[in-house]
Length: 142
Image (cartoon, rainbow, N blue to C red; front, side, top):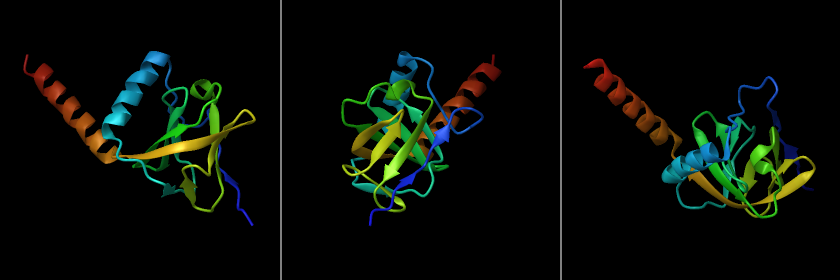
């Protein structure tokens, strides 16, 4: 018996949706996440979808916890994934998201997951903080 879990996060009133504003901003965010993304993995544990962000026509970043982020690529066609206000993840096994078997769902579409890459989100945040601290020290010295 297959267990189907759909975790949906809705943009209205939800602080967990980190939706980019423009295609240029999405490309910028995608480049940043790719810099910190590791090698593809087959699956990752997830009970609830903590947060998500569209970063391209076939790419989203999902957080399974505050500091656990994954760059997910879906198979084409996946129409308007980059502009949908809400997604869910259809899981075929409880508590894990699997490449090739599970899907990003929205607007009556099921976009099957092609690839999952873990993001070193703690390193990304640490580098952002260090850059911010360096910038504030530079501007404070003038």
